[in-house]
Every structure is written in structure tokens, then in C-alpha cells.
Length: 97
Image 1 (cartoon, one colour):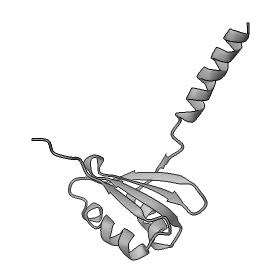
Image 2 (cartoon, helix red, strand yellow; image 1 turned 135 degrees about the horizontal axis):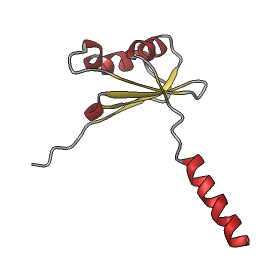
Image 3 (cartoon, one colour; image 1 turned 30 degrees about the vertical axis):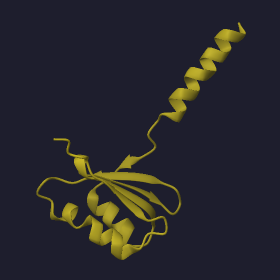
Image 4 (tube, helix red, strand yellow; image 1 turned 135 degrees about the vertical axis):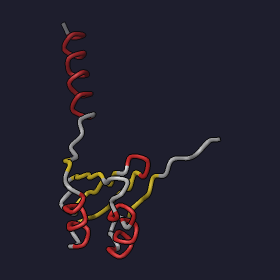
């Protein structure tokens, strides 16, 4: 019986730890958050055209941009000007070729 209970607790724990608390929003919403000083840290995932942010009140958001979206190309400039307390990172895929 103890083995069954331990197994159930383990499975439930894995589900809770692996859930994604990030909420998808429009890129304009993310940019507004950054410009207003409400973002603590950010990460740009270049290969997926995605930005992930964590606000100062610890909420997680992410947004995507299209290939022709001019705002996506200027994200680094916006993040640099904002001087986020936790900084930002850019994840770029490595070409192995």
C-alpha cells in the first residue's frame, strides 16, 4: 500500500512541476510591460521567434512574432533601453554544418 501511495505522490508531483505557468499574450502587451518597467527579466528564443518575460510580481508571459514583424527585430534594442533588473538573454541556435 505504501508503494502505491508513494507512486501516486511521485506522479502528481511530476505533473505539478512540469506545468507551464506562462501565459501567451500579444507581442504588443509584452512590449508595453517592458517599456513601463514592469519586467524583471526576459529571454528571446530566436529560433522560435518567441520572447519570455517574468514581471516584477513574478508572473510569466510569452509572445511570438512573425517573420515580417518589425517589432521582433527590435526586441534587443527595447530590452537594452529598459535596463531590466534581472537582465535578458538571447538564445540563438548553433548551426552545425
